[in-house]
Length: 294
Ligand code: FAD
Image 1 (spheres, rainbow, N blue to C red):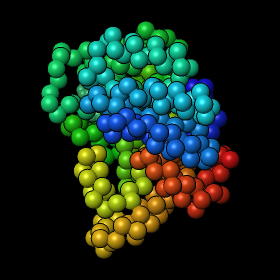
Image 2: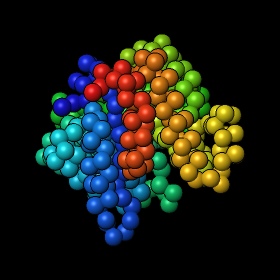
Image 3: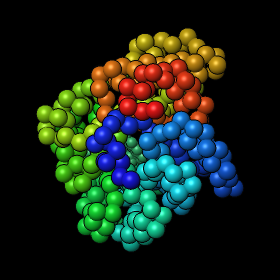
């Protein structure tokens, strides 16, 4: 089923997983993660696509297992900056063959060692146009958006104009970059609506349970850390168990506030740790039902 069809009826709750990066190709750990996440009955699970290339091959395989063995809708992330048109056609054909109908269409980050070939695609918008023209009606396309503005954009206005173009090119819903201050999400939704972006905007929430990785992730994603959270990190920096509790509780608080304010959907960046998602679900089962989710 296309995610856009689900979103017409209800707000969604979903998870993101990533293919394991270890060299031996140990894929069994991800299947344990999916098994555990499936017990929480999500509307969909998305699978990231490595811009660097190393884990690209596993994305379709993992998404196919989610869809065909667990009967959960799978969303495949697909980046285009390092891809040729032939590669995109090949992946879309593999997705079709595996009955996967949902693509999170992304540009991807520029590889650190530079690009090895002339670009076939410059922006996610072009990937939307390309897939829509080669595979009309086969896929529900979605896109990324940035509550605190994408790092390469000069200002919010430019980023929103690019976002509008990406939606006009076929993105039927959006998933946000992580944020730790919900006000940035509310600002994005308000400003997007003013500019005629009417598609659902799903909030991406990352329960960061380790102080070092929180600081690293925030830097990488260009998202700010509110004073309240930074004080907690300073106080409990050397207490891993306390940081875990803080990460789960902070994300849970964000989710309660978002649901209270009528969010279109919650997408949890699980970091392949199903116990974290489970802890959130167990602490607010009644609030989550507000998303029409049982
Ligand atoms: P775009 O929408 O193309 O935008 C990129 C930049 O260009 C923005 O600054 C935008 O304002 C600007 N821009 C867009 N169009 C134009 C235009 N026509 N003219 C001028 N400027 C323009 N990365 C991965 O490698 N793999 C993943 O699986 C992955 N999953 C992600 C999931 C989510 C929910 C999010 C939020 C990000 C994800 N990323 C992933 C990271 C993403 O690839 C990077 O953030 C990347 O830098 C931008 O991708 P985009 O699709 O948003 O790009």
